[in-house]
Image 1 (tube, rainbow, N blue to C red):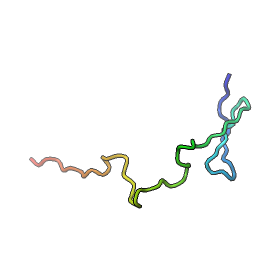
Image 2: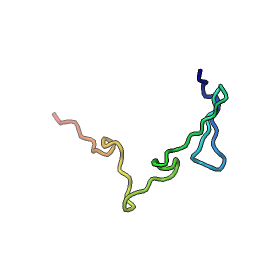
Image 3: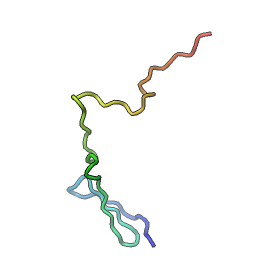
Image 4: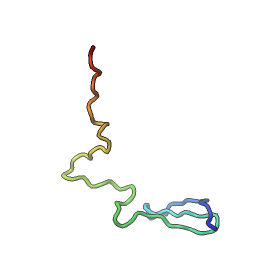
Amino acid sequence: SGGHPTVIASHPSEPNQFALGMSDGAVYVIEPLETEPRWGSPLPHDNGGLPLPLNPSLTSPVSEPPSR
């Protein structure tokens, strides 16, 4: 039977690596995949432009209610 997580710890010299200690004594190392950007590092921007918002409703102009 599997244990449940009891401890999480960061690696002292690898900022993108964490260890998850389980109640049954198992330890799992967690880190991003090689194909993913490193955790905590800024994402590259094309041509130095600003990043696009993920939610278009945040940038849509607020429409005024129709006048009566």
